[in-house]
Length: 345
Image (cartoon, rainbow, N blue to C red):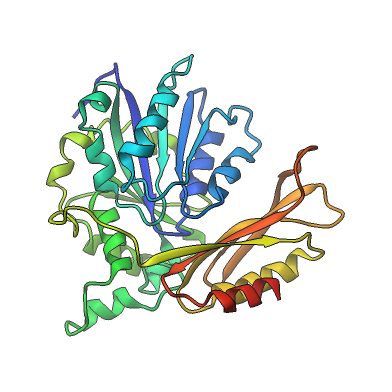
């Protein structure tokens, strides 16, 4: 279905924690080809790490006005409170943006968000160009929906006696069920057998024909991502998900903590501590920043299961306090004390 040229197209980027959504969006910003883009980032936790990653990307067109951060909860649960004002802000700018990217939190379900585009005040101004689901290729290759969870997906495929009502798997399956394009991330870490396994897991959650694209470091031709012209809001009610018969939903099974970091001396030692923290049972993601003694650049740290990366992403501002912070996201009840000991000592 072709969308109206009078409306601004929006691409919703969904995916589980650590799948690579922010990396994909950064690649789009770096290769915009003159398009005026705006990004809405939905965080989980008290520190807007993903928004800061994008703002610190060094792209000339990526300014404070380009990124709108929503940190008041899951976007699919707070559409009226957060999303509509964010759209109003973006659409009020001159010159008008050409395309809006919406990065949902790893906890968000795309369907309630897309359904908000049916509201008269929104429908006349914007349209959903497409829903892109980013999935962690290596994790799926090993039968898991995320890098640091037990092999739930593989077990359920082989053993019909197991409980299929796992909240994390439902989030994953609902994201895939709403997708118009699936990005298989971190493909450089997979072999042919891994690709076959990952693609099988994705296919199990796809009720219709959807293209699956392999990607490394989020590098996908933006012509593949943008300009799908689907108008998803007009057909989203036909995309069946686990939560269709529920009046609403919550994410009480997840929680997060923020750890303030003093200036550090050794990035490698910090990465090792993050690995230990990420291996704590029920911890899903660790991400944040650190100040390194004697270094003018800010250190970006991201950990998903045993995979932890760190690099200097931008200089500290002249008036900016040199302090670090890490957000730890996990299933409700994860051992906070163990995480704090691992990271802070």
